[in-house]
Amino acid sequence: MIDKNDIPDRGDDINGYEKIDRYNPELITSLSAHYKEVLKQIGENPEREGLLKTPERVAKAMLYLTHGYDLDAKEILSSALFKEEYSQMVVVKDIEVYSMCEHHMLPFFGKAHIAYIPNGYVVGLSKIPRVVDAYARRLQVQERLTNEIRDCIQETLQPIGVGVVIECRHLCMCMRGVQKQNSVTTTSAFTGGFLQEKTRAEFLHLISSKLS
Image (tube, rainbow, N blue to C red; front, side, top):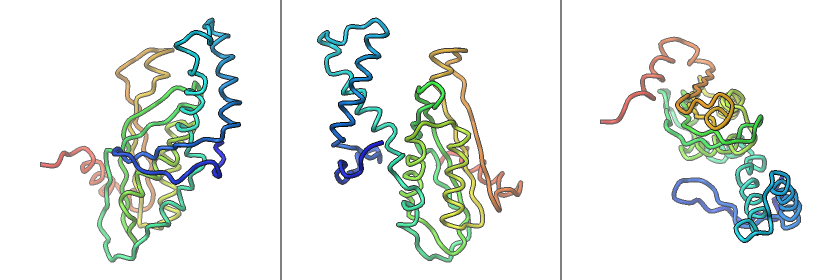
């Protein structure tokens, strides 16, 4: 994992994702050597011009794609809790998800839709997508990712209920194996009030509707 002492303050880019600008140089050197060997093993020449810096680039990319290991999702939520007497559903939908399948280390990507019913406290809206990133930027399976997001919000915010739906395309299905490019995997997880059919139906209706 990235040494936190080697990471500066992280600034948000226009898409809301954190960019890491500095890495542990020893870790980059070590990872680069392994990626250079991988290039040799697949029959490439890592000394040719186009590949000279590829091992280092891939090492940095992999550290960025897995920087969720260095994020504490519960701490992210706890940093922006506000006492508020609001007891209706709060929905944040169409949150972009980018993760890596732990079985083949290929990307899967799509959208997350998250709702909770406050129980005395609300959370800053930007923190919910950050929680998604904290868990998505790791080696994952979509089913566990869905449950981790649900459990983090439930345990930290203690709401009346939490609903999570994630829809993703998996490149391990599109590029290899069964090679079905148009398949979409949907997972869901609920707690509390969302276990009731009426509340769950309202949530599913809200995430499927478009604003006028």
